[in-house]
Length: 484
Image (cartoon, rainbow, N blue to C red; front, top):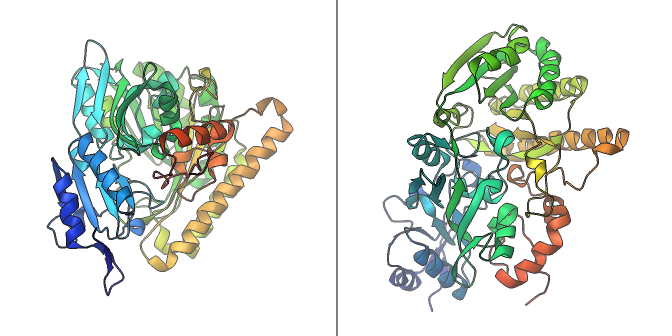
């Protein structure tokens, strides 16, 4: 057996003997080491703050090679991680000295137009899925940014522009191919390995490597209505009051994001609104007319193919710089005075840390009725309820600002937690068994109990079956119920 050597620059690397053994086990993969062309590029992540120097990067093209890499890593005591789209800001898709299984060469997407299904390999991005589906006049629930990987978003639940109409991404997942910790390659669906399918829908990253997804698709031949507006801060309360009405009056076809940002050329904190409507333009115009009457300083309204919708926020969320994300939730109607307090906190933060000028806070408003049609315990995802998501995403360039930016995001999320609990205390009818936490928005690691709530103990029991040694522990570490 080979060994891991420690280099002078403290980078752990896999020695040549062990590396040769690894390569000999793989039939359809490219293996990169620190001296390989393309190695540095393979380490890049959406956030530079979580980039690490892997001992080796395996780019497989088959589930069989992923299985072989998992077994090789385990048998040699090597850390291994999975990288899909590379958007994790927790560092879960990077390894210092271990093996990265990078799915970048597994992005094939096929569409069954007659059966209305989409099948995509585990490394696909939402852009790949959206564009392949659009060729056939179809769409499925995806994220709100198209350069994210389908794997992480799906396995954690998955909200998106179409969630109000069709539910979460996992609610439209028909089956998934999974490489398990013991190397087996299995299908999980409503008819095969049902307990694993239950776990994969919300906690999938803790149970294996998802190498292929099959989704339900829907007709989407007509363009969608969208508008990006910018308002001066004095319009904030009125904007929030409008957004509070969207979940009430929408049958799921409307979705609006209210964002605090300091976009160029303004360079000062503004209130942005990204409005979406999947239906007739006249209905959209009528719904959003009161918002436009507030007098935005910028208004870009258009009808576009749905496949382009997920690219509208790319400029706000492009790769590069150091980033973190932290989430919370709120209940509507959201108190405009409270939002004013958050805006003041945001403005103060940018004044104190000018390096973080590209930081954003996003409020999501849409009808959750469709999501709530499924019981809390029907999938591992435990955030079903009338919750709206909040995303706090600091962005900066200097490593000396790492701690202050991450601390600030925790602080802001904590304020939302407090506000949500205050609202529930005042109206007990709002209390349910949802956790009020969206795991995909938690890079700063809430506990698995906080993320999975009433489903946590069942997940622990299933870990003893599918991953008793806890090989898949880089996301929200679910501890097996029985130690081995």
